[in-house]
Image 1 (cartoon, helix red, strand yellow):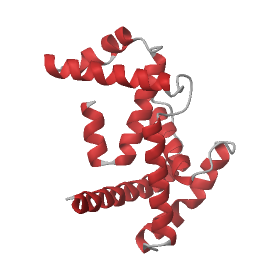
Image 2: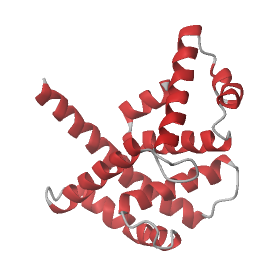
Image 3: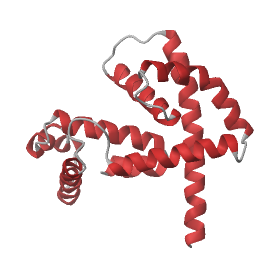
Length: 182
């Protein structure tokens, strides 16, 4: 919960990727809260109050995953909603705002996005979700210390730059929304 909150504030893309990891960990633990406490929460070095909050957060996620029927695959509704917002912003930056820096980064990443889309066998059509799926897979490869080719490193660097700027634009957009709310 504490890591998720920090990531949500600093980089929405990192937050989405982190939440996908949390969903995977919950699935790997077979939705068993005792296993989650022993393998994840107990290693966080939290005080009594924080520990209770973290346990409640994971319990809430388990409940949501079951209610939303994403126990074996898929993502929580709040994460899917964020993907929609990011996709909308992405399309707005390219087509409405015509942000030249973003357009440049997009054009640099586009061949890699098309390749990632192909690798996802047409199951995902949204470019931002394709990018995040690619980054997640790349992250998992690196975490498992599997070899990564130079071409993959180059592709993920281009995709990561694009998503990093998109996250920064999202943070700017949300700050503007907060200012309007007042």
